[in-house]
Length: 345
Image 1: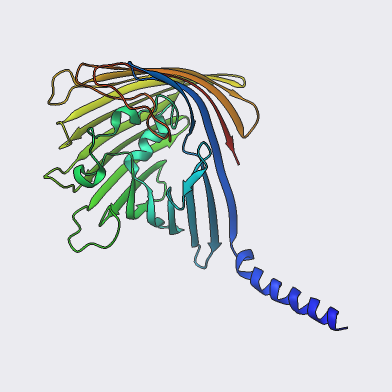
Image 2: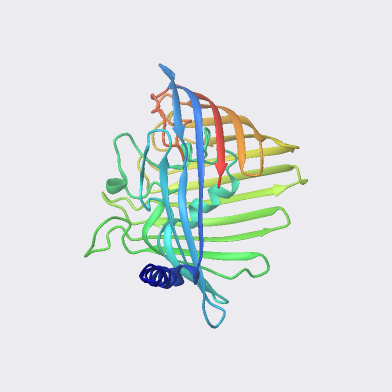
């Protein structure tokens, strides 16, 4: 009799503890994305294993009165290649959505970064457009040059409008794109975009500005678009002009295409970074590849890319969304051959 009573009490306690969880719609999701790469910096070469923006995340949402919904997300990078990771290092936020639109607060991608992700044929792979669009110099860090673009704002507050005739507006602000408290908001930043998407067509324009240090206030305008000529054939392109960045103003532009043949998708893209204030400081990146879909959630792929650097340029082909990247040697071409697998869960 005593045992039955204890079992009843335990069941009641467990049931009570489960109520808050059951009240919310909770989802666990993630991606395991790894590749085997042969990378060459123009002087030496080596074979590497890379975990490429692999992640695990948790989402929850709760319906409220007046057609409102509260939601949250915690997402972190997972290094499948080296057995490590950082908690909440990726898009992590809490928000509220309703007829007025969506409001979020936390750390997450800026509207400028989102535009690149929509048109990049090799996002998180060898040949990612970020190899050219990120603005940095040898030995420089975000702390002393300002935003390098294609990043996540820390301490961000964002508003996304409802969709009006397939058009949306995003406004993303951070009073301090750094860690810890501030009394001067020296790293205040803004990112804004307007986008249209319908019937296989996407077009967007974004502007981002970052109050940096050392007298630099980097800013960029980015235009991206894609168009599905058929259900199998997509064309995409992007243009970015960046000002007040290390080394001087620089434009990056290019095009890409993909074509589906059943479970196989062929893809390619070419992008150019023109010269800044330094002569012979431009580069051209070309990448070609093919995907093979093993199932709904599993894709394998092969990709080959080369970034041809001018005499005073040192752009990579293996950076951007990848946890293993080979540094470039100024004036040398960087190349890579990648065999990868992505498992979404």
